[in-house]
Structure formats: C-alpha cells, structure tokens
Length: 274
Image: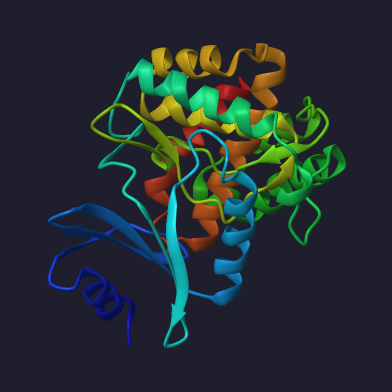
C-alpha cells in the first residue's frame, strides 16, 4: 500500500486532496461530517520524533489536535483536525493571526521543557555559535557559483554571533507557512518533527524574519506584540543573518545547478550585513 491508497482507505468514499509536505505526504480528507488531515511519514523514526513533541505540546494553545495515529502496512501515519486552508504565508498582513502566532510561541517557550528534549539533547548557546561558524564556512564552497561577495562571508564571521538565552521548549521551524489559519481565524502551528529545546531567540527571530519576508512588517510586529516582547535590533540581526545563511546553504547544497535562482537570497544576506 502506498500513501495515496492509505488516504483513500481513510476517506472511505470521501474526497482526497494531496497537499505539500516535507519528510511526509499530507492529505486533506473531505467527508460529509467534515475534513481532517492525514500525514503519512517517510520513516518510522520521523513519526516517533513528532509523536514525542506532540505529546509534550498537546495541552498548549495552537498545537495540532491529534485524532489518532497508527501504522498500516509499515506506513506510519497521523490523523488530525483540519487546521485550515490558509497559512500566514498566504495571508499577507493578517495582523490578528500573526498576533496569535506570537502567543503560541510564548506559550511554548514558557512550557515544561523536559519532555520536549530529543535524542540530540537540544541546542545550547555553544551549539548555535558552532553551527553559525560552520554555515558560513560551508557557504565559502559555493561562493563563486552564487556570486556571493567574499566580504559578505567575512562580515558574517567577524561580526556579532547570535546571542542565546537559556534553552526552552522550541519548535525550531516556525516559519510563516507552518502557521495554519482556519475560517474562524484560529491559528495552529504545524510540523513538530524538529521540536527540541533551544534558545527562545531561535524561534522568535525565525518567525519574525519569515513573516517580514512573506507577510510584511505589520505582521512581523504583530507577532512580537503577541509574544509580549521584542528583540532589539542588535540581538535580532545576527539571528536573521544565521537563518539567511542556513537557508541559502541548504538551497545551494540541494541545487541542481540553477544558482541564479538564489540571487535574491544572496542580495538579502548582503544587504542585512551592510
């Protein structure tokens, strides 16, 4: 049985719509009594990672509402309440939803962290600094093909590194497209497979940068208001540089040679670093 056949079995005569997914296949199941989402994992280990995180987050505002989960013909799957057809990436300047996204992150960061720790033990300030250095050293390999100025990498490595507070329960991937919004305006943070403990600045800065890029400055500000705090520019900038560099490196390493498609990211990184 493949993931689509599994979705059709769950639908039992209802409609099946496949959605975009990463490390999984995602389907919306539409039946007369309502719609649900079915996530079919690419691996059992990925299923276990997210199960652990969702169990730790089950009582938090904005966490997905799990209906059931299981394994069918070696396919691990999870069925949840449909969180809506929109995301903060497709609802530009929706300040109300962005405000709720900030509240979700604040509740997560204030929760008990012990159950959220995965096998890697989470991310400390030392881990962040080491990863920051590694990202920009690895980008050097692609510098010529990306037309990335050497001075940009030098500024990143010689400037301020991201400053980190005590690690807390974190999602680590709270980009705009992970915040789903339903017709009532309720917001759900999806995809918890990378959840762990990390400095809260990681989540905050990634959400802020993603909203600024995809939804606009009013949405990014509203997220900060919902969170109840705002990072000062001197703290926020090195984190944004880190996320930009990480994203650029990931795309360069997975590129099929079309490096010209990454010009916008190169220009943004260069501009942020001044």
